[in-house]
Image (spheres, rainbow, N blue to C red):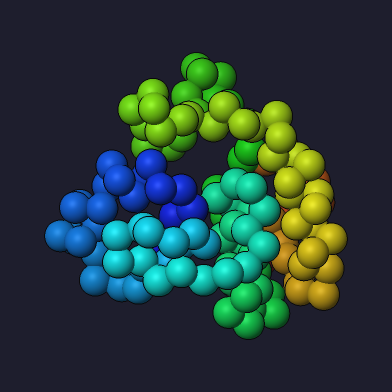
Length: 135
């Protein structure tokens, strides 16, 4: 399943998605190039949106991985390199903590653990990935 929440991203990458992704495409807004619109409280950033989407589809337990929520020491803002300037590059990071705080309240009945090695988020219990997966 591919989830992306903004039209500029879909405008930039829809051809690549159509050519190389066979799974279901979902967006919380309409007009996103063959992505099915699903209405849910997506939280204002893609990480919070992924949590909300999992809950929307019935997840009772969520293991977070890759939620560092901070810029790298070298200034990188994404693991994959920066997007073109007009797509934005995590410039709203200072707002994410409030958005994740609201999401923690929204998803209070769901077991959520954060298995990210190095994270700035402290809303959910921290665990190792191995323990989260029962190894």
